[in-house]
Image 1: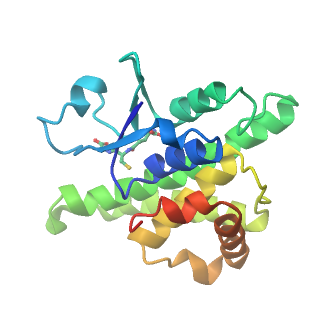
Image 2 (image 1 turned 90 degrees about the horizontal axis):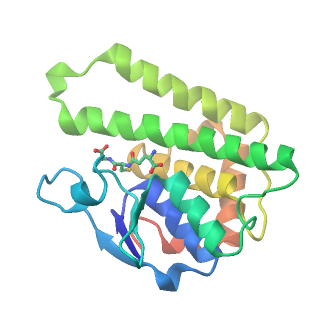
Length: 202
Ligand SMILES: N[C@@H](CCC(=O)N[C@@H](CS)C(=O)NCC(=O)O)C(=O)O
């Protein structure tokens, strides 16, 4: 399988950690994609031109990290990093993934504001809207941080990637005010070697 990727993408990192903890990483070949390049064949593989995009061995394509992690979990037998039962546990995990993905989405949009728009055209109200999502989500998570399991579920993986992206692009400012999330990430990083192995500098 081929994973269209970029080293800094937190969504790609989520997929790579999921593949590693499921023992599937050796079956995935990482191929860099340039989402800004109209000639990159990423846009024929995924009309949205987004990463992660996974090209399967038979040429079929899956995209969106949530779909890809669901597929990887299925390949590994199912119910490994996305619980199937009890339903309450399943939806808690999926909700945590959605919250962490939301932090990543808002953070990526903030990065794009500086990448794609001239400084004179930055829109403070829109920046505040995105920053508020991150702030509120981090506050909710700080109040009740998830535990860390030896085989992490996809919610824990996504949260680690969201925090890692805040470290990379926002100078880790979240650390000062979220000590319980710092502890979560320290524990996650110690329990899941794939976290360090998939970092942007790795
Ligand atoms: N919901 C998507 C989000 C993926 C995403 O936003 N990826 C970014 C890179 S971190 C991207 O491809 N950006 C290029 C674009 O939006 O055109 C997922 O979970 O895979």
